[in-house]
Image 1 (cartoon, rainbow, N blue to C red):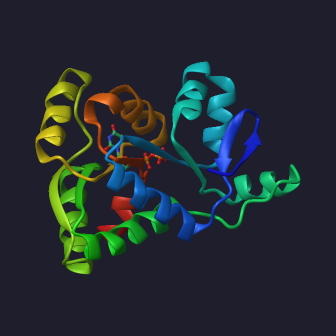
Image 2: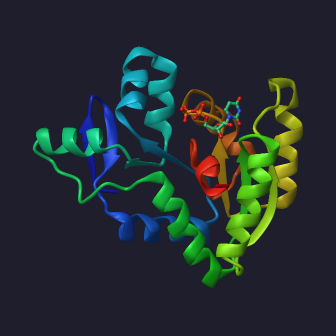
Length: 195
Ligand code: UDP
């Protein structure tokens, strides 16, 4: 992955097309990939918190979601192709997922929101298989049960919406156990999709 180094965080320089192509290969290879959609708040969090920095360093792919990140790359003299917003990436993966019959698992947001987001995505992309979904309001004691449910569903793509301070550490913690080819935090995306 061609990257630009921003304060020790390696952000992908790819545009949407190359990003999707890379993630399609990740799905074919079956190896776990954590995708982080970086915005300046997350970069600041990493600079202040070594454990968050560690998560950023271990992520297989960091895409420039925030315009501030796109700007900083240009300023550093190593511009990225374009902004790759997590929301758009979610839709692009769903689109390609229709053709390739990929399996998706949706985790996070309130029970009402995730149900509505699931219905809406299924309507927009009838060809994808949404093999599981659940809300993001569970305690750490329930982590294992949530992880096991995802393992049993064996998705190709896992979207997690629990707020940036929670979702990225959660994915990182269970990455090897979950072993989903593409795992990505999507923040408030389900709230938007559910209408
Ligand atoms: N969320 C969740 N569990 C939590 C906290 C938040 O599922 O414990 C969901 C929330 O319902 C929303 C999404 O995470 O759908 C993003 O939350 P928020 O906008 O508060 O976080 P941010 O993206 O601003 O960090």
